[in-house]
Length: 352
Image (tube, rainbow, N blue to C red):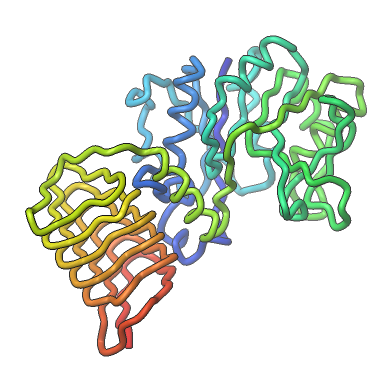
């Protein structure tokens, strides 16, 4: 079995963060989102991985390399524009043909991984298998109508309520999907929809099976989704205290402190994770804060936030529900209190 990761989307709902960052590489719990998928493939015994890339190809290649870090063999498949999930399958036919494959959207976070999903496919051997989750906003997703575990109808982002079972961004296919993606036409959005391809399989008497997600899943397409994913993944971490914590500091709950990080006269309220080379001084961090490498936090409180590399946070009363891109500086001028900030790389913000 192979895996196909879709990492060509531009992340318009996450701007300004995605003006300078591939959305699949935005960190949650200090790990790029895409890396969790690669870990899942290794755990499921998959070794050959194709990554569909677009305008952020160079950034993704630099981060993932040849895949050997995960004991994977990675092939990059350029997509000229984000023309739909079925289009990504169409252009990947030479890579996927001949073996079943997992298709995984690179900005999804799935705590349970794909091992059980792959095992169920190998047991039942349908032509396609989809992962479903019950959601409160089905109009944001492709949704499925079921009879037992058999899929009878799929609709992309329905305007009227027909089901609250959303397609999670993980699919399993055999070669019959290649016939399907060639048979369909672009939707009103101008994209080749994977829901249309799966519906073609249903209409042509192919076996399409559904499996419910048993654990937590999140499509990290919006800032609040990223923050929720960050909270969930931080909650999975244990203690790993490699950095320096002075006698004037206190840790309550779980914390991951990388080697080279320094905690001085501060309080950490877990779960938190602090990256290498980061200085936290006279501050309160957490709960649910992830601060990456080379940052400086002084005289501030940071909770429920994602802070990327080389940021400076100084004299801020409370920074909460925030996402800071690389190299952002947030400083106080006169006003303290709570602040929520979504800032792209290299932003400079004076509060007050």
